[in-house]
Every structure is written in C-alpha cells, then in structure tokens.
Length: 354
Image 1: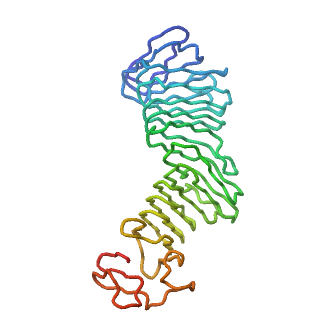
Image 2: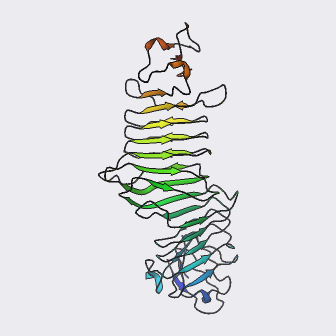
Image 3: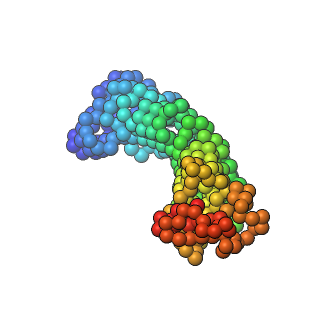
C-alpha cells in the first residue's frame, strides 16, 4: 500500500501484505485465506485486520504477523463487514508478538489473546475470552438480571487483568457477580443500573481485588448501590447515588463519589474517600499498632459522621446512638486521653484519631 489508509485483501494463497504508513485495513474473508504469516505492516498507523467470514471457523494468527493493532470479527465483505451478525467466528492470536485489541461479533466467539497487554471485547454473543499473559482488559456483557454472559479464562500470575462490564441491569434488586480466578480488576463504569427504586447490589465474592462501579448514566429510580469487597486489596468506587461500600478484608480504597455514602473499611489498612455529600465512615474492626489503621481522606466537619461498632470498641458503652462528649478528647499533638473517661482521642494538628 501507499501512504494513505489502504484496504488490502490477499485472497487465497500465501501472500505478503504491507499497507505501509496510514491506518490500513486488511481483509480476510475466510480462515483458509491465512495459511501462514502474511501481514508485515511497516507503518505507524493503527492498523486493523478484519475477519469477515460467513461460515463458522477459527482464524489463527502467527508469530510473523506484525504491525497489526486491532482485530475485528465481522460477517460480510470489505470494510463494511457486519459485526452485529451471529456467525460463530473465533480468533487465536496466541503467537502474535505484540498486544492486540480483538473485537468479536454478536455470535458466540472464542477470542484468544497474546502474551502481551490485550483488550478482548466479545461483542453481544455468549463469548469465551482467553487473555494469557500480560495486563489484559476484558469487555464482558451483563444480561438484564445482572448475570455475566461471557466466560473469561485467565492464567495464574498472568498480569493485572481487568473486567469491564457492559449492559443494563433492569428491575434487579440483587445482582450477584461470581467471577473466575486470576483476575484483579472489575470496572462497572459502563453499566447502567435501573432498579425502579429497589436497591442494587454488586457483590465481589471471589478472587477480585478491584471493583469500581460508577454507572455512566444514572436513570430515575436508581436506589442504593451496595458494593462488597473480598480478602484482597480492593478498590470500590460508587456512583452518584447513595452507596454502601464495604471493603471486607485487605488494604482497600473506598471512594463514595456523590451521594450520602456509608463506607466500611473492614479489616486491613484502608483509605476511605467519601466524596461530596454527608457521608458516614464506619469502623467495625479494632485497630492495633500495625493493622486495621484506616485513613479518612476528606472528612468534613459538621457534615460527615464517624460510626464505631460496639462489638469492636467495647469501651464505648452498650447503648447505640451519639457518644457522650465526655468520651471524646481533642487537642494539639494529643495521642492519649487527659482523664479516665476519654475513649476517642483526636490530634488536631495531624488529624490522627486514637
């Protein structure tokens, strides 16, 4: 090809294809048209390989295929291939020597990435996504009930891997996501939760340490959004509604965003960020010299609240409600009480709470 954005179709046989500079499009209409490494793009543009078969099959890419950044599954011919069709087309790029963004169609695709930092996007079908090594990103679909339609397979110690959730949760009071192992991140920022005034619940209950959820669209009727972490180091991020974020074990970061949020760090040394709104920071695990030492990064006087669990802080008394002023002592450089009644000590110069 030349210096422009070229469209190249090799056809049958072992061809050598090079689009040169520009964002080039390489067309493969049948898996059998790619019997060996054929694409050697020497340009610097974002080049795309379009696999647009009308029959189910698997396109295998080889180590010698180079210079491609994106692989798109379609059905039809030329650059207008239809990615909404349901033909089950698969891509195996395990041997390719650079990261790829691989996009499926509306069929049941199996997309296998490289050993690098790939992005695998299954499309609308019930897909199987295999990332391999590298810090991979998986775009997966949720159905209306909140269940994940796609299957993600990730290897042990295969990098820091992220799930990006897509889809609308409609009339769902509880959406429980049970996800596979060896994945580190879960991002729900592309999901929309419309629960018709019912609370929506996303529970992180397997080996996932990162769960940000901030729906890009807040529809009328979105209620309380509850996020629960696990024993790993989680990051939980709420949306503009009134959230309840519970980090459970691990050294977590909880960010409430807008709304009247409740943040529960749980065990571990957590960072709690309430965001705007009158937030409540809950301490339900007794601290010691090294563990369960939480940090509240944005406490606003006369707006936010601190809540202490009587089960963990037994010396605060046996009655629920506001603490007596006599239990609280605040002073510059304070690190201990000044009389026998003091239970909560606030250092006004450092912000430390004892």
